[in-house]
Structures are given as structure tokens and as C-alpha cells.
Length: 235
Length: 296
Ligand SMILES: Nc1ncnc2c1ncn2[C@@H]1O[C@H](COP(=O)(O)OP(=O)(O)OP(=O)(O)O)[C@@H](O)[C@H]1O
Ligand SMILES: [Mg+2]
Image 1 (tube, each protein chain N blue to C red):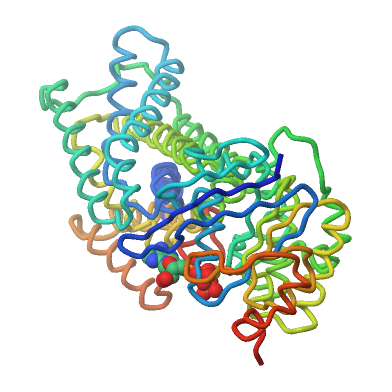
Image 2 (cartoon, rainbow over the protein chains, first blue to last red):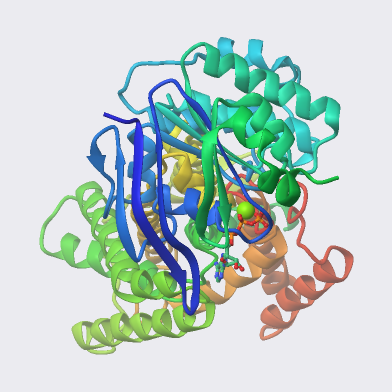
């Protein structure tokens, strides 16, 4: 059984048909990339997995469970945690409080990542634990958003453009953390516009183009595919 | 004398705080103005009154009244707000529909009371006075100050330090992000409405006792004061609401004592404009907001 399997998913906003029959799966322990240009539907896909956006048709199964009709909060409590585009930290609350709120998703499930683990992964969060989250830098907010999701005991982590707006050095730090998490067993679906980084960090990848999967395969292969290079890796 | 007036003002101000906190909490969490909050306050006084005259011990009457007004507030959420919340852009429709609920509750109270002013039976609360440093303070005033201090402290503790309080603030700050973190916003709404309603109900009982008068329109001036408090204190700010309530109570008591009657409201709104000129976001609008600010 796949960790996540999506079958023929359609989503539209009014007249805009944002996803047109997307099928995708993520196996236990994998880190899979989903790349695509602006407006391809990447965030729509993640939002549909969290049930923040309603699907028109199609099936989503998370750990064998059909997620149709679940509330967004119930999806995250089941262990499908989504780090949204633009981080969305709770800007009025301290770093520590953000991490505490993160624990709500775990509910009575056993701890997977402790507060100490998160502080060790991102030491800056411990240094700034009393700071109001809205005053952190973009990179620190991204680390907080990931740390907060880890507190929720993820069985699958969805990340929406974690490198957005970050300097290359900070992006390195974030990706190193993601690789470490994955090496230790966390299953990840990584959405990126930065295809270089995404291919380098993952084993398999999908390319989304105007609401459809245009390519899929091992990341190393896609990174060498001429059509993919021309569209997504061009200088 | 001045200190006596200040003391009296702090007592009424602390009841304003009790009333305004629920209003500001709902605003902080939902960004909606609950105009039926004044009627909930009135209902609190009515329910405690009818419980008392039907022989229930006063403390139980208060408890029952708070429970009932908490449930009334939940009902207001379900009837007036829930459906509107789903469609977005709910501010104005929600204001209108909560005015509707307010009118319904007020007309029911008018029918029930036959448009009469009601008073708690003599001896409902012991009438006793103490002299403290030359100030005359009644047992009721002491109890009010004590009860409000305890409840306000408990509320702040609850919002700041408990898991549920963090969920309230998370929903207030960013509902969608909160949902992705496993926070059930619906249950947060129900609980904040319950707390807001129970506090308003208690405030109604206390005001009914303090002025020995209960009538179906008693919520309206308080609703107006709550608007002032929330604007002066900073929208959605709990500390701001407390401090603004106390300021308002004192200002009112002083104007009543030293200025021609009828000027009170003019002075209070003068104060409001003055604060807004100096600090357009209110006293605490951009410094802190326990219940979460309006910023995203
Ligand atoms: N709330 C919405 N209402 C209407 N249309 C929307 C909404 N959100 C997204 N869209 C449209 O759906 C399509 C897919 O958008 P989406 O945000 O999923 O793309 P994306 O791949 O995440 O893009 P980006 O890289 O810019 O984040 C776009 O055409 C977009 O304009
Ligand atoms: Mg996007």
C-alpha cells in the first residue's frame, strides 16, 4: 500500500480547471518532488490533499484511508501535515507557542519528533524561542513552519516551495534538514519551482504542466531529459 | 470626593471589562461584531432574576444564568454567524443578523417583563458597607472587584498558557494555517462564544445588583460602551479591553460627579476621538494582542 495515492484528480475554481486528471503516488520513506512553473497547479494539489480546497472528482488515499469529506484539521490529525506556501506562521505568537500549536495535530498519537529534536535540527528556533514569529526572517519562518509540522507527528510531510524567497545558503540549510529527515524515514512530497534543487534532493519526481502530469520518473533521469531541461532547467 | 468617585468608577469599569472581553474575544477570533452581546448581558440579569424569585439560592441562580447565557451565545453563533462564515465577506451581513437576534431577545424580555423595571428581591445580596482609608465601599463592590479580577486573570491565563487558549489565538491569527495544524476552528468558535456569553450574563447580573434595576433595554448602553472599549483598547486586544474598560468606568464616574448631567456620553466619545487621534489603532492595537490581532 502506498503512503499516498492520488487517482485522476480534478479540481476547478469556478471556470478555471486547475487540475485535470492528476495521478500520483508516494511510497513509504520516499521523498518525491513535484515541479512545475507558475500557476501549474502545485499548490492546488497540496491544498486538495489537505481538503482546504474541494476536489471535483478523483480519489485520494492516505495510508489506505479515503480522505474524502474529512475536515482539514482531521486530515492533519491523521498525520498528513502540510507546510503551506508562504510558511503561514502564526505571526502574533512566539516561536515556542507556534511549536506548541504544532503538537495539536499529533493528538494522542505517539511523539515522532520531540521539541528537542526540532531545536537540534534548527538551532535558531531554540535561540529565538521567545521571539514573535512574525518578526523572524523568511528562512527562520520556513524552519519554524517545518518544525511546527514535525511537532504534529507527520506520517507524510507536504512542503509547498520551501525555498521561495530564501538565499542560497539558507536554502541549503533547509534542504539539508529535509534530506536528513527523509534519511531517517520521513516520507515527503516536495513542491518546488526550483527544479535543480528538487531533483537533487529527491529520488523520484513529477512535472506538472497546466494541471496535468507531463513527465514522471527517477529525478536523475528527468534532470537529464531534454524536454524537461528546456522547459524547467533552462538558465 | 475624588478617590471615592475613582473607586466607584473602577467597580463599574471592571464590569465593563467583563462585558467587553467576550465581545472583543469574538471579534478577535471571528472578525465579526456580535451585536447581540448586549442582549445576552440583559438575558443574564433576567434569568438570574427569575431563578431568584422562584426560590433558587442566589449563587445557583448566577451559575444557572451563566450557563444559560453561554448556551444562548452558542445559539447566536449557530443561527446568526455559522452560515455566513462559510460564504466569506461576512462582516456586514453578520452585523445585521446579530442585530436581528438582539431584537428578538429584547422583545422576548419585554414580553416576559411586561415592560417593567425589575429588581432583585430585598436581601438577595447582603447590604453592608466598610470604611477603608476613609473610603466607603460596599460588600457588593468588593465582591465585584474580586470576582472580575479572578475571572479576568483566569481568562488571560487560559488564552496564554493552555492548549485550548493557544488554539483560540491560532484561529484568531490565521484560521487556515490553524486548520493545517489540526485546530478545529468550529469547536474554537463554540467555546469562545460560550465563554463570551457566560461572562456577559454574569456582567448583567452584577449590573442588575449594583444599580438594583433590570429591564429589557439594559444591554444597549453597554453595547455602546463595549464598542468604545474595543476601539480604544485596540481591536481584539484583551489587555487593551481591560484597561480601556477601567478608564471608561472612571471617566464616567468623574463626569457624572463633577460635570452637568447629560454630558457623560459626549465626554466618553470625546475621549474616544482623542485616543484615536493619538493612536489610530487604539492603545494596544499594535503592541500586543493576547487574543490575536487583526493583522495577518
Ligand atoms: N483561490 C483561487 N481561486 C481561483 N483561481 C485560483 C485560486 N487558486 C489558484 N487559482 C488558479 O489555479 C491555477 C493553479 O494555481 P496554483 O496556485 O495551484 O499554482 P502553483 O503551481 O502553485 O503556482 P505557483 O508556483 O505560482 O505557486 C492558476 O491558474 C491559478 O490562477
Ligand atoms: Mg503555489
